[in-house]
Length: 257
Image 1 (cartoon, helix red, strand yellow):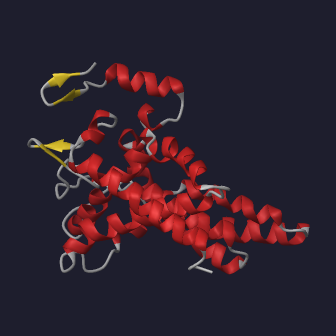
Image 2 (cartoon, helix red, strand yellow):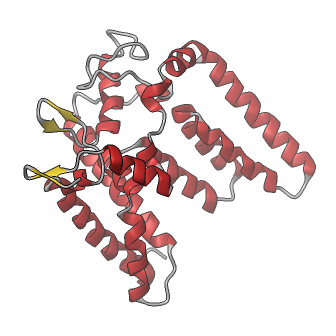
């Protein structure tokens, strides 16, 4: 039940965490930990989401897989074609640019918080290192599409209807390709015949859509340096150290290196 004690507690904890993240971003303290997307002296929030919106605006004029001047950083579209069909972006620009990514981030934090099952309120403090880790803060500040993929993955994990899972895995696979590995859930069927049929059917569907987008895929992977993960996305100690060795940590005209 949604209005259970656990869900209410999770909701208020989410509000608290979200407010702290809002302060970190609005005061630009967050950029001591993650690199900012800066253009003309201004930091661009939700930069990963905005490149998808800009590609939608430019798709009628240019091949956004090759060039995307509508984006502030001239980043090309390196996601699936399915993300180029967002409706009414010009008419509802404020909703797409600010409200939608903010709502998705809030839902993301809520889902993460609600997945924990602690015995007392003090134990909820153990979530702080996770919520405020570099990869999570970076994903939230950039409004990275992997957040949406994560939310879909949670839906798939809690759902038992095979058709529902087919549709969800297909949608997120066509958006960023790697979620195709979620087809592993079809291996958990008890009958080998069902496993074979499900894997074969899903593979044929994916291959069919990828065949239709083959030319776009070649363009995307020719610019793989744009979407390949940098080391500061890593949870590893090595990635953490490398990030801070390379980062110029300057705040209020003071160098904190």
